[in-house]
Image 1 (spheres, rainbow, N blue to C red):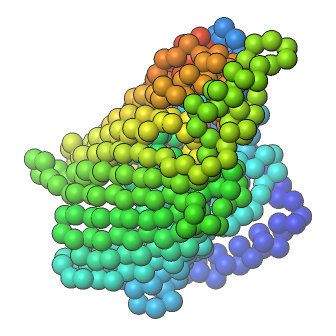
Image 2: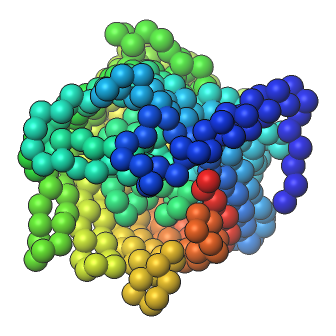
Length: 456
């Protein structure tokens, strides 16, 4: 694989290399008790292909039915230091490039590559992904080891009972909806519905990040999290709406840790609310019927949602997240979420209710500790309001086939991750999507993928 960084990124690349070299001596944090500075880098290349599939018709936001390829490539730096005891400051720059299926990111509810939101076209683009402060106040209880890693963590120790504040530029998913077995599309499942709830319309810019604050209270076997984040100025677009007291995404999550037959597990309940200038599907449907296409048939552009997007609205959702170790080498996960489904998508994908469940098996079971197998099933559904809008020929940000023979979008995903060396993996992944974009007149689609991931 070969790519060239444009000249305007030469200086930034040199500075990145210098920073890495300067901290090389402290990046091996497992040899020290507590890191004061840290530097880690990840690289991920994800190539995907779908053969031609059957489609009775194709609309403006349909995934192309002819065979096609897509790819993403990201290089991310994770830099941190402790400005004082209990404080951690992190900077995460990233270079990204990639091209989705169908040129634009359209035609699915459960998209097949978790990196595609940060794709920047065929030219690598450098941007600041995160810049945030984490402050921890220890309140006693058993000391717990924090291991260093690619997720903005420095090696150290914390009390089991503690309060943690995160403030700055980060992702809602950095704090909320953790899950040991289904969280990271760079090392685990690739589909959007496996690394968080597909129906979780969490506030963020088009790349998945925003500004805000979150607080976590750890007390024995319980965790309470609450936070507020900025969303996009326009739904699913990149510029951020900085009016965080007017337009925002709020979330609160309760987590309980337990043990079943000696194996650890956790249950989490997450509730969220978005407030923003959004269009309701019922208003957009009325507009569609009042503004027929001059060529005949319903109007198929996105103008209906834009035309009625004039007032602030609230959007709600509630979800349950379960993880459970079944044996020393096997773990189970499940997420289920339902939203009110009355308004257009704010910042994530076009799903109003979602269910995902699966199993991951570590390679220790067959003598390959760096390997792993994962299998999962997902089901995504739409609200009645959204279905009626799409069936009338409406088009929203990601989906709109011009008509709709509604069925739930059912997805299978399975992968095998092969450890090439310490810190390097090659993964083969297969996904089968029944009723893409919730339309039984299209599909099924088979998606084959190869992913290379390396950590330094």
